[in-house]
Length: 178
View 1 (cartoon, one colour):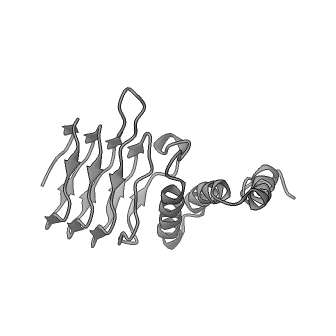
View 2: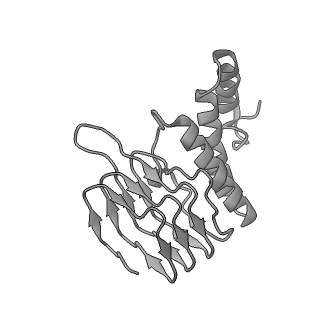
View 3: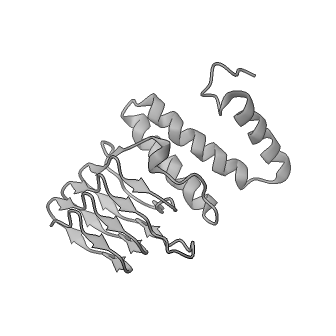
Protein backbone atom coordinates (compact mmCIF):
# COMPACT_ATOMS: atom_id res chain seq x y z
CA UNK A 1 0.00 0.00 0.00
CA UNK A 2 1.44 3.36 -0.91
CA UNK A 3 0.48 6.83 0.25
CA UNK A 4 3.83 8.26 -0.87
CA UNK A 5 3.75 12.08 -0.86
CA UNK A 6 0.02 12.13 -0.14
CA UNK A 7 -1.38 15.23 1.58
CA UNK A 8 -4.03 14.70 4.24
CA UNK A 9 -5.52 18.10 5.06
CA UNK A 10 -8.44 16.76 7.09
CA UNK A 11 -8.55 14.29 9.96
CA UNK A 12 -7.50 10.80 8.88
CA UNK A 13 -7.89 7.48 10.67
CA UNK A 14 -6.31 4.15 9.84
CA UNK A 15 -7.52 2.79 13.20
CA UNK A 16 -7.29 -1.03 13.46
CA UNK A 17 -6.14 -1.39 9.85
CA UNK A 18 -3.90 -4.33 9.01
CA UNK A 19 -1.11 -3.61 6.54
CA UNK A 20 0.19 -6.97 5.28
CA UNK A 21 3.06 -5.86 3.09
CA UNK A 22 5.06 -2.66 2.85
CA UNK A 23 3.07 0.41 3.87
CA UNK A 24 4.66 3.51 2.40
CA UNK A 25 3.89 6.94 3.82
CA UNK A 26 7.15 8.45 2.50
CA UNK A 27 6.96 12.20 2.24
CA UNK A 28 3.32 12.19 3.34
CA UNK A 29 1.91 15.31 5.00
CA UNK A 30 -0.60 15.14 7.83
CA UNK A 31 -2.14 18.56 8.55
CA UNK A 32 -4.86 17.51 11.02
CA UNK A 33 -5.29 14.70 13.55
CA UNK A 34 -4.06 11.30 12.45
CA UNK A 35 -4.75 7.92 14.01
CA UNK A 36 -2.78 4.74 13.57
CA UNK A 37 -4.31 3.40 16.79
CA UNK A 38 -4.14 -0.40 17.04
CA UNK A 39 -2.83 -0.65 13.46
CA UNK A 40 -0.88 -3.78 12.62
CA UNK A 41 2.09 -3.46 10.26
CA UNK A 42 3.26 -6.95 9.18
CA UNK A 43 5.62 -5.59 6.54
CA UNK A 44 7.97 -2.63 6.52
CA UNK A 45 6.37 0.69 7.48
CA UNK A 46 7.92 3.71 5.76
CA UNK A 47 7.26 7.16 7.22
CA UNK A 48 10.63 8.63 6.24
CA UNK A 49 10.62 12.26 5.09
CA UNK A 50 7.03 12.58 6.34
CA UNK A 51 5.53 15.69 7.89
CA UNK A 52 3.23 15.56 10.89
CA UNK A 53 2.17 19.21 10.90
CA UNK A 54 -1.05 18.53 12.83
CA UNK A 55 -1.98 22.13 13.57
CA UNK A 56 -4.05 24.95 12.12
CA UNK A 57 -3.47 28.68 11.58
CA UNK A 58 -5.04 29.46 14.98
CA UNK A 59 -2.31 27.42 16.67
CA UNK A 60 -4.52 24.50 17.69
CA UNK A 61 -2.63 21.21 17.62
CA UNK A 62 -4.08 17.82 16.73
CA UNK A 63 -3.13 14.38 18.05
CA UNK A 64 -0.77 11.93 16.38
CA UNK A 65 -2.04 8.60 17.66
CA UNK A 66 0.04 5.43 17.39
CA UNK A 67 -1.35 3.91 20.61
CA UNK A 68 -1.22 0.10 20.61
CA UNK A 69 0.08 -0.06 17.04
CA UNK A 70 2.36 -2.99 16.29
CA UNK A 71 5.30 -3.14 13.90
CA UNK A 72 6.51 -6.68 13.16
CA UNK A 73 9.24 -5.39 10.85
CA UNK A 74 11.36 -2.24 11.21
CA UNK A 75 9.59 1.09 10.84
CA UNK A 76 11.48 3.88 9.11
CA UNK A 77 10.85 7.33 10.61
CA UNK A 78 14.16 8.85 9.47
CA UNK A 79 13.89 12.55 8.60
CA UNK A 80 10.23 12.45 9.63
CA UNK A 81 9.29 15.82 11.11
CA UNK A 82 6.88 16.23 14.00
CA UNK A 83 6.21 19.97 13.97
CA UNK A 84 3.85 20.69 16.86
CA UNK A 85 3.27 17.49 18.83
CA UNK A 86 5.01 14.33 19.87
CA UNK A 87 3.33 11.17 18.63
CA UNK A 88 1.52 9.14 21.28
CA UNK A 89 3.36 5.81 21.40
CA UNK A 90 1.51 4.44 24.47
CA UNK A 91 1.42 0.65 24.28
CA UNK A 92 3.19 0.58 20.92
CA UNK A 93 5.12 -2.51 19.86
CA UNK A 94 8.04 -1.28 17.77
CA UNK A 95 10.52 -3.56 16.06
CA UNK A 96 13.90 -3.12 17.72
CA UNK A 97 15.55 -2.10 14.42
CA UNK A 98 13.11 0.77 13.77
CA UNK A 99 14.79 4.00 12.66
CA UNK A 100 14.29 7.54 14.00
CA UNK A 101 16.16 10.81 13.49
CA UNK A 102 17.64 12.17 16.70
CA UNK A 103 18.05 15.81 15.73
CA UNK A 104 16.25 18.85 17.11
CA UNK A 105 14.87 19.93 13.73
CA UNK A 106 12.67 16.82 13.54
CA UNK A 107 10.99 17.19 16.95
CA UNK A 108 8.87 19.88 18.63
CA UNK A 109 10.78 22.22 20.94
CA UNK A 110 8.14 21.94 23.65
CA UNK A 111 5.33 19.62 24.65
CA UNK A 112 2.80 22.22 25.85
CA UNK A 113 -0.29 20.26 26.94
CA UNK A 114 1.15 16.80 26.36
CA UNK A 115 4.13 16.56 28.72
CA UNK A 116 3.46 12.99 29.93
CA UNK A 117 2.79 11.80 26.40
CA UNK A 118 6.03 13.39 25.15
CA UNK A 119 8.01 11.97 28.09
CA UNK A 120 6.70 8.45 27.43
CA UNK A 121 7.38 8.71 23.70
CA UNK A 122 10.97 9.85 24.34
CA UNK A 123 11.45 6.95 26.80
CA UNK A 124 10.17 4.47 24.21
CA UNK A 125 12.47 5.86 21.53
CA UNK A 126 15.42 5.91 23.93
CA UNK A 127 14.94 2.18 24.54
CA UNK A 128 14.72 1.42 20.81
CA UNK A 129 17.92 3.29 19.90
CA UNK A 130 19.74 1.89 22.96
CA UNK A 131 19.12 -1.64 21.61
CA UNK A 132 20.80 -0.50 18.39
CA UNK A 133 23.89 0.74 20.28
CA UNK A 134 23.38 4.36 19.20
CA UNK A 135 24.55 6.28 22.29
CA UNK A 136 24.23 9.79 20.82
CA UNK A 137 20.66 9.08 19.73
CA UNK A 138 19.93 7.49 23.10
CA UNK A 139 21.17 10.61 24.92
CA UNK A 140 19.14 12.85 22.61
CA UNK A 141 15.90 11.15 23.67
CA UNK A 142 17.10 10.80 27.29
CA UNK A 143 17.69 14.58 27.55
CA UNK A 144 14.19 15.28 26.23
CA UNK A 145 12.70 12.69 28.55
CA UNK A 146 14.46 14.35 31.52
CA UNK A 147 13.27 17.79 30.39
CA UNK A 148 9.65 16.64 30.35
CA UNK A 149 10.04 14.70 33.59
CA UNK A 150 11.29 17.88 35.24
CA UNK A 151 8.38 19.89 33.85
CA UNK A 152 5.84 17.44 35.24
CA UNK A 153 7.46 17.17 38.69
CA UNK A 154 6.64 19.08 41.89
CA UNK A 155 8.44 22.40 42.27
CA UNK A 156 11.22 21.16 44.61
CA UNK A 157 12.02 18.20 42.37
CA UNK A 158 11.88 20.51 39.35
CA UNK A 159 14.74 22.50 40.91
CA UNK A 160 16.96 19.39 40.92
CA UNK A 161 16.16 18.68 37.28
CA UNK A 162 17.03 22.30 36.45
CA UNK A 163 20.43 21.96 38.22
CA UNK A 164 21.04 18.66 36.39
CA UNK A 165 20.27 20.34 33.05
CA UNK A 166 22.27 23.53 33.62
CA UNK A 167 25.29 21.82 35.13
CA UNK A 168 25.70 18.92 32.71
CA UNK A 169 22.96 18.89 30.05
CA UNK A 170 21.50 15.84 31.83
CA UNK A 171 24.88 14.08 31.94
CA UNK A 172 25.71 14.60 28.28
CA UNK A 173 28.20 17.44 28.53
CA UNK A 174 31.71 16.80 29.81
CA UNK A 175 32.42 20.50 29.42
CA UNK A 176 30.03 21.32 32.27
CA UNK A 177 30.67 18.73 35.00
CA UNK A 178 29.02 19.13 38.40
